[in-house]
Length: 209
Image (tube, rainbow, N blue to C red):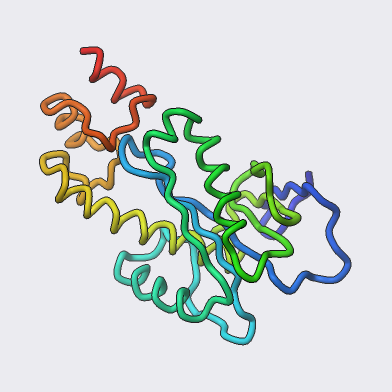
């Protein structure tokens, strides 16, 4: 274990190459904590010839700014991919393993193929197509990870708006599936819908009540 910028912990699976790879992918997810909906993973290879101003951790950006950057990233990135891991798979694998599986899938979908993956967090998936490095708080440190966090967040938020229309009464458009008091109250009143994660304790307790 070593430390990068701002003291962030960095974990290497492979020794750092002497020559910086040309195709470096950033990887991040959105939606590990919610009780409903998918966890969404994005991978992005930025194009150094087409820099994108304003990249940052999606959590510190407004919804309007995220949406604007989403379009710019999709247009200017050298490659990007977005993967949704649905509630059923989350329940089968657990949320950590489902997230890691989504990260590996997103990297395999990139064209051109990545030579190095920078992954937000402190865990690395198996079955990666390239060397990888896990970076704690990477979404605030590495532009490619910031771009991935924006794609994942915007994609998931849009999906939750669709689910709000499909399953009215839960308030998915407002809380995006997180365990807000209004969501917990709706779970008690309505019971879980198809998109709820049965392996998560509040949903499991509601089913047993």
